[in-house]
Image: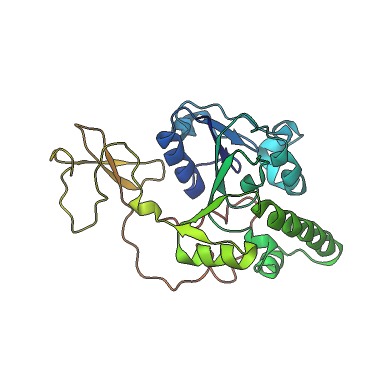
Length: 268
């Protein structure tokens, strides 16, 4: 079985990149695709040696620093990725990755961090926060209208949605009319050995072989308990204080910074 993993864009290491890193670990022979790849050499460890295939936006002027300015071209760009030779497509999407074109004999599973926030219910919040008014506002609204139409259409190309919380699943249902399987990133396993996730009250020994676990840290400086014998990794983020179930990771009234990824979802 040939597997393709589609990531939004690669320029830093954040929440969505952590998910893609786990997918790369689970499917070591998978091919990685992305709209652009500008990750610095010293931060490429999570790619596990992969060299992503990118789109034409990679080569446009000033793309290294301002690729987000080409947002109106991203639907076209992601549709040009040729995945026709792959059996399973896994997309890690908060905007455009789910829009890859697939055929009836292919299976497309989308790990959806969120529908495109700034194109849907938070459009006014983002535009106001970015100070976009007048003619620029009308142009931005026209672009976002086009993106909404494209976003709904491409949802039909996904065979199964996966969400990291019930809140995101509700956003997917509201936006696309689709149900999502809910999983939690903090409970994910990143190694093949059959070890259970560790909670703050659980024993710090490997459930498979009984070896004491050692603490390591991932690219986001989150603690990981690793088994030195069977190389199993327990993924467990620090316990956070209870927060009201509002939009994942977005503080109410916070301005939109186009250079900041507001779409990675709940960091746990």
